[in-house]
Image 1 (cartoon, rainbow, N blue to C red):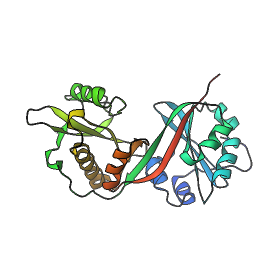
Image 2 (cartoon, rainbow, N blue to C red; image 1 turned 90 degrees about the vertical axis):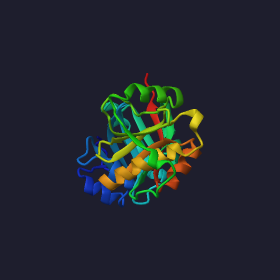
Image 3 (cartoon, rainbow, N blue to C red; image 1 turned 180 degrees about the horizontal axis):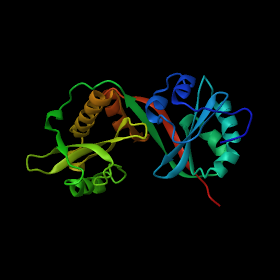
Image 4 (cartoon, one colour; image 1 turned 180 degrees about the vertical axis):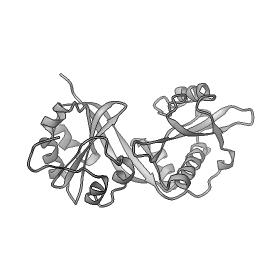
Length: 257
């Protein structure tokens, strides 16, 4: 990605995991083998990623590196970012100023990447969970999300989801649902968790999350999820179910001419 002599290519996932001290995001969020280049500088590393919004970079510290290491790496990446068609960069939120000082930025957001390798305790309403079908129930799932969680990313009917769980009223109305998908790394990742606004505050989202998490941990040994940072109620639910935050990301698209 770059010719700067301070930078070195990391070519294996075990090497990156060792460099980053067993970082859970590296362990479960970055695929093995890599799908893009990985470049390390003193105290910081950049991981190329390919996503639904284009080609991007994760940039985060290693070995005790902090703002200076992040700044130096971002500055060294200026040329390679243009050469490789990078469209967005994510840094931990505490390094937002370093990113803004180095690149012209466009829109973006703040979100948390969370994980757990422990099955949660049983929760209320978990016994009401049912398995939904990604194709047969797609229209109903889409309608629930469109009205009650427009930013959800469950994508029913696309085949991206490995497992849907939901809760219906005694009359059959779908009032809560959530999806378990897979990251590029193969780790299970929760998405599209939604509760009908008339049924919020009862613990239905907690039950859906607990059921999906339990399945993921039982089958894969881990479960991950992403959430918008400005959502304290959701964070409280996830922490109560045993999740931990690996990174609170500041993600921005790069400005175009």
